[in-house]
Image 1 (cartoon, rainbow, N blue to C red):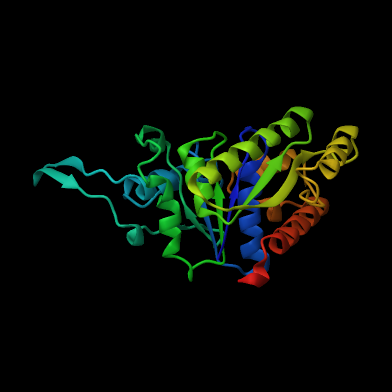
Image 2: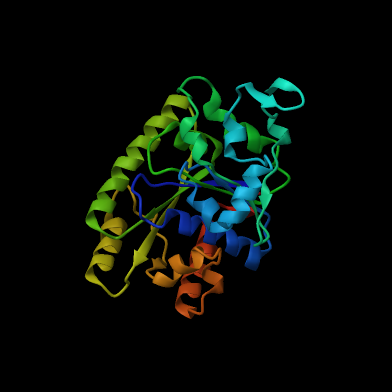
Length: 279
């Protein structure tokens, strides 16, 4: 099982778009067993994979979300028949992901993650890792969509992962930001004595014939830190992607051969970089 976190501290870089479309392609075209974990309190990946009504019904029925992984508190609840009772947290092995209508699985995000009081050093940073330890034989790939902040949620995702993948827009500010990101990842992993590898950088929301895109390619290819990390193809800019996501549809559903071709190349290189043959 390969576990990969998609990470960037800057919003609007199509991180979630890349995460869910890699997962979708791995399942649809490669027949892989895939789990997406949405650890971003904004739960954008979840909104790409579940309609509003589906999500409301899912939550109403007390189905599992990422909150179940982290929340270990015993909570009081009131029943009309039984009076005051207590609800106990689930054991990790009891947490069941949601099977999406695309065929792969999702552990949904939830806004209530913001309300959970959790300090560094409690040990709950390892909750995702501990949860996935029991699923080694269940999935081929786990894709974790992380929040755009250096938070405890990001740390937990990184501690669970073997690799991280960086989506980045080809503008100077975004490129500067990934150098800072690299330092933060190194610091966090050093504090926990954890090793994680960079699977690479995917340029996103690109217009490939522009000087901005070509300069970004050149800078990354010549960088001492990022040399050899840049994926050969980018996620090109298409307004249709955002429109389809609102309908829980994906790049494979869009009639755009170039867009699909680039995604095919990205996923092929992704598989090579995370070393599927080492499984």
